[in-house]
Length: 159
Image (cartoon, rainbow, N blue to C red; front, side, top):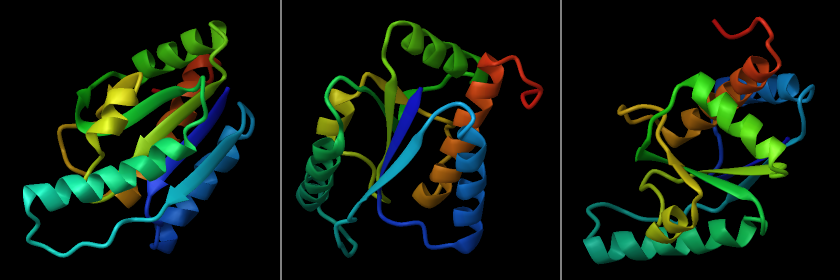
């Protein structure tokens, strides 16, 4: 299984970069991971609804341009479906059996994701009803990918 994470903006905090690197290193045993960053659109608040939509759409176009065809797209959005770690592992396992070897996960910037990205997604997923900083979500995503792979491999990490 291959995972591609497309994210808006860069991770600035060293402690987050260190955690992300650790989980990416652990994931090497299960497949390849790649990160593609797209530039965050500048904005200042307050934003009108029109300006917000325009910013999201510009970011969305950049995101969708990076999504390979025939990949399974997971958009992370707080209004998405919530699943357990076991259910996520099972979903990835089924995708692999069906020949979907590339899973693309998308994390938006501080304003969220464009409706065009959500519409293209095969799964809109929420990790919690809580709101997390988009930089922290990268670490959470890689930890959950590692957890899913260890569940599938019947390894000890998941409890």
